Amino acid sequence: MTDLLNPLISVVVPTFNHAQFLRDSIGSVVTQKYSNWELIIVNNFSTDETVQIVESFADPRISLINFQNHGIIAAARNQGIQAASGELIAFLDSDDLWYPNKLSMSVQQFLEGNEIICHGELWVEEGRKSRKIFYGPRKNAEYQNLLRRGNCISTSAVVVRTSLIKEVGGFDQNTQFVTAEDYDLWLKLTKINQKIVFIPEILGEFRRHSGNASNSVLRNLNAELAVVASHFANTKQGRFSSFLFRQREARAYYGAARGLFASDQLTESFHLFRKSLMRSPFVIRTFPGLILLIAKMIRRLIKKLSLS
Image (tube, rainbow, N blue to C red):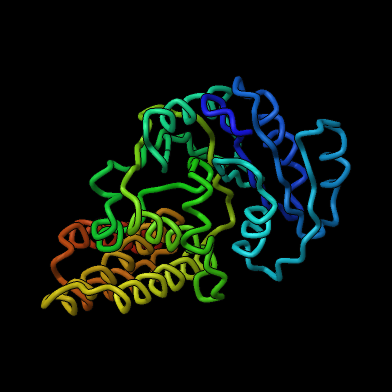
């Protein structure tokens, strides 16, 4: 029988060779103040100490599924969703972690009538100062704004009513969506349900790894563009559809350009800023971004010439 005040939460954790992070991730679930949860770890046949780490917790609420996802993390998450028994589902990447009151605060929001709950995260990146990131706001998570402006929701920060996930068919396993399959899911969910809330507190940590340079940024850009194209094709955007689509593409190119700029990939960043302007000159922030990039390129050139 379902406990209306203490709903079971199914926590789905896909993992592959993340043993160095997995113990902390599992530990952050085990130490939650809210105790009515089950943890489903979907292991892509890791070759490190993953299985031993899971078994070391010896907690009956923790289960391990070995599942070959062939590089499609959406398939792993869907496998966890199929195995879930909870009224709510929470997703946690195996290199992220939660703070002890994450689930209790999320359940409180659910009991108040919200069915999609998201909280802030601390972004932790090697060699850089940590940053507090707050997602949303709610108006940006309305379907049309989410589609036109871009993603404002984070996978490891979300708790969702299970029936909603199943109603939209879970994560899309389209290979073109890989790295942006979560964005596609938020679009599908917000299209059918607006009972969403953003908790203005930091309740977890999102780990960003060094080495995710141009290839990663470009792969995510292509996936984002594929998701956007899919939704624009299936949704009536009115008489300005073509203009809105080009503007959304420009926003995607701008975001990727900023990512490459931050990782010091200046030439690649310049090409994406240029693509952004070519798609639409009405994404105003592209101009100051491009100016900053050109200034940095000039300074680097002057320094190189002075040393030669």
